[in-house]
Length: 492
Image 1 (cartoon, one colour):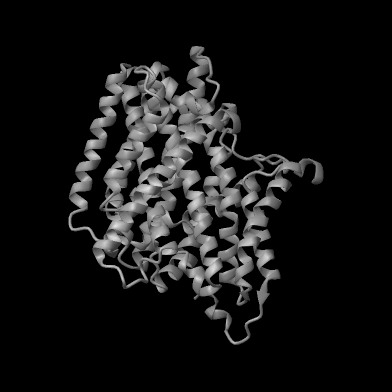
Image 2 (cartoon, helix red, strand yellow):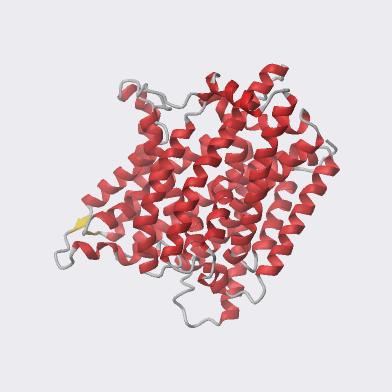
């Protein structure tokens, strides 16, 4: 496929997003940027969150991951359902009752200044790393198939991508993202459907025949019963539940969209609808991964070194130009929601949690907007440098690395919120950052030497739960009995 055709597709799609931005960002204020004036239709949020949750990682990395882990990831997806139910019934009522803009302000009221800053810091760290992983996938594809042919350095490609995202989120913020995510989710889902259709046609079979081939192949194995294995089904199920809780329910980016709904009831309807759609969509992507490997096996295609590259390689090089364009549109559609949402939520968290923009009355609205622009631009360049660094160190499936990192960075958040919700204790607030640093360090060494220390046991994504437990235990050591408050007030 000619590089110029790929570039034009990318450019046209981006211009379309700018048009949506223009429609949605007129007369935008800080309230519009942060919470969409609390006027977002729940069904639009639910649909758009599919693209934001899946991102380019799910779209491209999960199909390639099927070759190593088969359909075992589906147990993680089933676990998501339990996590989303917890978010809808426990966390969303809390956030709406306290009328939060940044969800981490809950920690200030519950524990104090240092706990609050610790929670916000770990979100910012998690989101910078996660967003960089996701954006790397898209930028790397554009580099390989377009900019390498024009001898343009990878750093320039990254800079172009970052600037485009910066420009179309600069003014409208969450209000713009709610609508752009809807468009992008549509294109991403269509790309998956059409990719399956293209492979079916190239294999000269029917969809029912291909479904039969997949379920009779080794790729369709879902349940692993060896408890030593990282793919052990109970590990995957529990990990999925807690990954959903921390990467959605304790994540400012995802909750910012829910908080922008008109009321709690709408936000809950959004979460329940979104959760069941996500199960079906993830299964469809796993099915796509299986047929990619079946197609490669039947046609003698040599596997790429990185599993993430199998989908783009087959779509662009073997299925024809139309299939290649469909893949690229889907990939771009999957990548933009995670990138724009990350940049907006990082700006929101830093502005509210560290600059206290919602509390100060000394600044005018224009001054606040000017500061927000500066923060927004600053985080864009932070993402730029982390993506460059990630290209140097990347050596395996991004989806695996993303969840591994999440185990270390989201674990302290899990422990902090769990302790706040399920105990009535206060804590020695100034010591909380130390606990939040020590817990991931212990988890790192536990994961590294678990096979020696625990009779061959290998930690998978459940390390997130262990990290949360260590943080919870550390807070228990720091507890200050608070007999004057009833347990019912512990969530406020």
